[in-house]
Length: 128
Image (cartoon, rainbow, N blue to C red; front, top):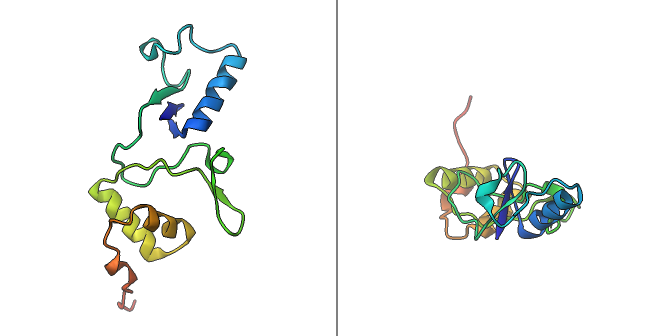
């Protein structure tokens, strides 16, 4: 399960932590189970499985503060991957990122191992 809150998407653990914080502040809705009674800007709404297609890989909105953050060898972190599917534009986005290189792109290549990355190792030979 994932959570939608304040125009972002969060992993289960971060979403539950936000719920606890909103409860502690006294601003929780009367019936959090009745998601039709409040807006996701007021209180996190749960989603059973976040696999909607997106134009890029989705990571927890908590970013490097994510409870389940992915930590790279140099110590920097990104929010846990939310295992979303990709649109055709999303596939192109990931392929372009892999062409450009970097640790996050390498991670995406692992996550989306079904994408054909053969053409991502080609270099642009045009001279400017």
